[in-house]
Image (cartoon, rainbow, N blue to C red; front, side):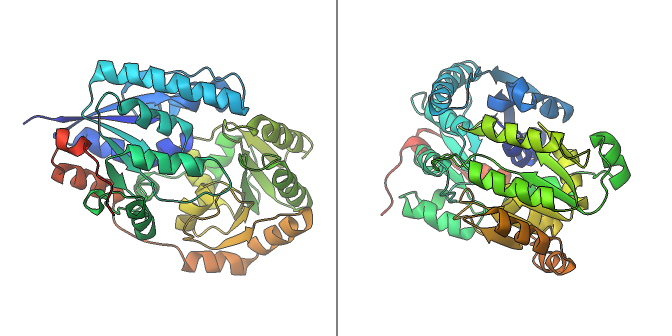
Length: 384
């Protein structure tokens, strides 16, 4: 039996957390030869060198593609994208995969799909069809859809959107988010264990705060960041801050978060990366989340965690949990929303809306087994 070699490309801590269950299932299945390619923030010390999380999962890395991103402005991101296309194409040429798998909307995922095209390698895309209208990732996601040959959206509405982009419905498999599998399988730390690992007294209430740049906004989301910090300063809570990603404007946001943590007198702390085990354990023990991370839409609902979603970064995504929306946050409105999220009624509402489902990673692997592989898959006709 000939095994299908699947090159799974990962560039960020968040996206790896979603891909990890799929990587594990592919690695266990004798029909597949899974090769993990690591790039982007995973290999950047300023972003926490999160390749260590992959190694901690005992995942073998087939190739590393460092990008050496020297800044976080538009030019630096464009240069990193070009470097990723070149480096990933070389990795594909050496590994000779029969399929490239990517997830989401980051520039690393776009580069992975673009590099596969001239090498005649089909692409499988996870989490396509979604909308995040406040960032240029919106455009990258839909571009990846058009570069891909097999689609694994997380919801039926996303699958319909992919079909409206002209993709063949027979190649669209609605599977849900693989985050579900990771959340169910990961053994969580107790509150005391987590406090020791974070070196922070997790005295209730605990607020998780993550804010990334809004790359289509004139100020890159700095006003939203300032509104969030005001709310955190005026709220009596323990605050766990996670650093922004490497998008344009990320360093300015990080500086503001670091300054807040420094003047918080020990009740707030900023982390470059928590790792999946500590992060999911934190969501399990937290009382509320604030910011604009996709985690507030995709993962917080499974913990019944109230979320204050600020700005436009996640605008357009399907809402699964109990989100308090602040599209135009002010210091006053952010403070009021956070106070509301910390009330017992918000927690009760979030628990009632906690979604359930099967195993998305199992569905993905099952679908890959049914697909007829060969040159015919590379031919894409616009489906009207």
